[in-house]
Figure 1 (cartoon, rainbow over the protein chains, first blue to last red):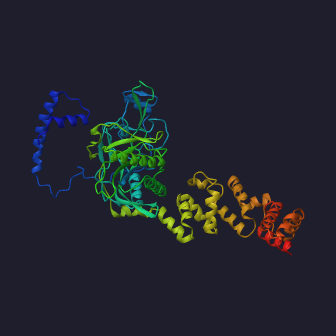
Figure 2: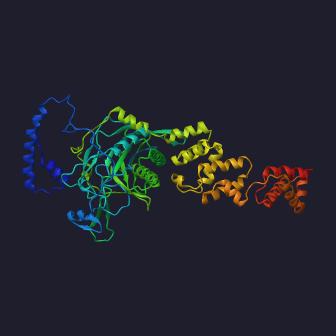
Figure 3: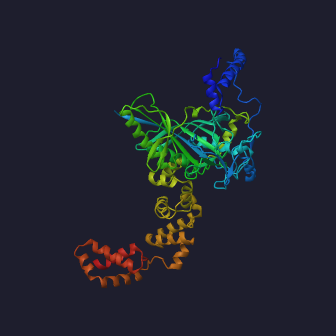
Amino acid sequence: MKLDEKLISRVANLARLELTDEEKQEFTKQLSDIIEYVEKINEMPTGDVIPADHIVDLKNVFREDRASASLDRSEIEKIAPKFEMGHIVVPRIIESIE
Amino acid sequence: MEYEPVIGLEVHVQLNTESKIFCGCSTKFGSDSNTQTCPVCLGLPGVLPVLNEEVLKKGILAGLAINAKIASYSKFDRKNYFYPDLPKAYQISQYDKPICEDGYIEIPVKNGLKKIGIKRLHLEEDAGKSIHSETPGNNFSFVDLNRTGVPLAEIVSEPELGSGDEAYEYLQKIKTIMKYIDVSDVNMEEGSLRCDVNVSVREKGAVKFGEKVEIKNLNSFKSVRASINYEIERQIRMIESGEKIVQETRLWDADSNETYSMRSKEDAHDYRYFPDPDLAPIILAPEYIEEIKKTLPELPDAKLRRFVDEYSLPEYDSSVLTSVKQLADYFEETVKLGANPKKASNWIMSELLARITNPEEIKSFHASPGMLAKLLALIEDGTISGKIAKTVFEEMTATGKGPEQIIDEKGLKQVSDTGEIDSMIDAVLKNNQKSVDDFKNGKENAFKFLVGQVMKESKGKANPILVNDLLLKKISG
């Protein structure tokens, strides 16, 4: 499968990455090569195989519903780029998604 | 042209667990901002979310209560989007393998009941809360992550609702059911119940759906109904004037009673779901689900039917009494203690509900079922009249004293001593000769007046049946 620059731009935008035109060209080629290489997998007949949602053979890993201590707010303050009045401060959000 | 609206609801119900869905932080509402977070909530590298089993159990219980099938295989997925109230840049949710699918509930409509299909119920984590500065020129938003990771069950209806009223009834039913099974506080003001609406309009009888519009920012049942009604009108107006409806998200403005378009980027809905490798799949044995099923209490619809059948109550009484589980329990307790069901129902619906703002808190109400049953017995055996009983009830609710104690203390016992009543009648007749004459001249109302006067003389305590009998004997004889 050949990827085009339009798709690369779209994926970059979804990941909030800003790419220059040269980078777009470069990554289009690189990613196309990678995908083409991996496409070999498609030759395997997988019609009867149940998709693996999880690679480790684990199921039903639960914890008990018990509240435990949370972090002290000062710990968040240390790692947040900006912290004021008990809140993490971020660039103004105009639209809301959820 | 005739049109029909097609409406579907997405309801988020906050599950009332002690700790969050994937970590041990408390879910308590109203704490100081950012005091209930941990590395999992903050999305720090290297953390491992672990599912709270109580969330799973409550989700299954909710699914059973809405007649859904519980999946024997279920998993969590990552829903990717950038937003500061979700520091991981993805929400853990369920995509193609939700815990419950294919349910339904019944809602009351004009001529009976309507079955509304429920597509799915899935589990997910809530996002944080952001506050936007109102100060112009202040280009910052403030984020509180306490709510991040609070467990939610999202209930998605089929597009089978036909009006704002039906949406209202649907929400009411979901709320009542979730309360009955105690999986959520379902309080829309506190955000433990949230609702998004999908509305489209099509020509009546058309097979294809019209372009749908999603409405958000709904903070009450009333705004859900009003926004749907508004949106239906708006879409019909557009179709009739030849305009095209675009698929979009609109926000409800409760002040102006309108929806308005929320400009959003085209790619906003490209969530690129994939299975969350941090969380193991959930594979449930039938016995596990069966155990949870055993804890399912009698649901509101079944209780309503039983009240009609078992206590011969009218449909209306039954629906009022079963609208809140605690109220239904109160009623049944009163009846169990010997009260006549219809009489108990009348007292609860008129006297009790007039004095209590939140029937869920009836346990803390001073007048217990035992006291109400006793009060009804005292009316029955003639110790007090129905009218005096209201005074006693008032006193009971204010002080928590039993009815007999109140009657003793206040001297409210009904007078059934014929001699005593006789002398009261004599006094009244002496002072109301005109009414006596009126009665003798055939005026029925004059008799009622005289009875009233005797009751007044007795301060309401005379046995009204005796007063009637004795008075009639006296003036006709």
